[in-house]
Each structure stands twice: as structure tokens, then as C-alpha cells.
Image (spheres, each protein chain N blue to C red):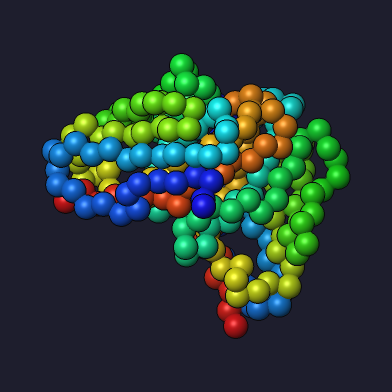
Length: 114
Length: 113
């Protein structure tokens, strides 16, 4: 089984709808992240959490909210989806910010807002 | 604020040849870590290689190596003996200790048979 899973893998929704993207991990990592990928812009950080009680905004948090339900679960919500939120969304985890610890990514969620 | 720049949106290389992807970053820190990630068409993000800033020796992983120039804040990726499976988006990333990762905009690499 994959270490980091995301559901759904693909989603089409309409403008104004609320949508939740879910992320689960079995790596036992404290740190979890939500990124958005757009062509030519790379991966931009939406929110991140260094432990269950720690939630931080990234560079593009407007229009998004998150919930860290447990060490293993980190959900991203779009309260009222708009077309420019159409993108590929990635969840990632890491052990700590020390050393050469890499990030482990989920398979991504392709979200289309019509 | 730290930034990561990849000045080549697209690159191509002949199969079996060598290609170098550029990455520069901006930081005032002396202790940090640099990474190259690969994203093939499957869209899965895969770590290619990593480097600690305080280590002078350039990291290597099989056909992949880096040229780390700390003073110039440059971290280029060299792929030797390019293979069709190397075709992907490549992202350079920076992280200072205990902090979040910052990604560059990516370089799309095509491999020509």
C-alpha cells in the first residue's frame, strides 16, 4: 500500500461548491503539507502542519482551509470553489525539518472547477 | 524571503547524451538543504538527489549528479547517458533547517530517441 494516499484522485465540481480533499499517511511523520501545482509555477504551498496542534498558512492560503484530524490525516477544503482553483493538488509528509529528510508525496488530486 | 529560480522552462536532450538543468536560489542562511525532484507523466513526485549546504562535495546518484556552487547560490543537475525514462518535469527545492520546502517552477525535460 502507498505510504501517502489522497482521495479523490480526480474531481470535477461546479463553482460555489464546497469540496474536501483528503490525505492519509502511514509513515508516522509529524509534518504534513498541501501544495498546488500549476503549469509554469511549480508547487506552491497552501498550508502546512508540523504536528497535530500546529497549522500554518503557506504562500497561497486564501480560499482554502485545512484540518489536521490526527497525526496521519490532513484535509484540505475549498469552501466555495472557483475556476482559478482548477489545479493539481499534492499532499506531502516529512519526518522533520532537520537534515536531508525528504518529502514524501501522495499521487495528487486533479481538481477541475467549472 | 527565500526563492528558487529555474531559468529553463523546457529542455531537450538526445538519448545517451548529457544534459544540465539550472537552479539558483536566494537565501541569507548558511545552513540549508537542496533537492531535485522528478515528476514523470504519472505525476508522482520522486526524489532524485539531495545536497547539504555545508558539504563541499557534490552529491551523485548513479547517472545524476549536481554542481553545487554555494557562493553563487547555484545547484544544477547533470543527467548523464540520458534515457527515455528521464523525460519528466524536474523541480529544484530548497529548505533551511526545521523549515518548509520551497520549490522552483520546474523544467520540462524531453528525451529524443
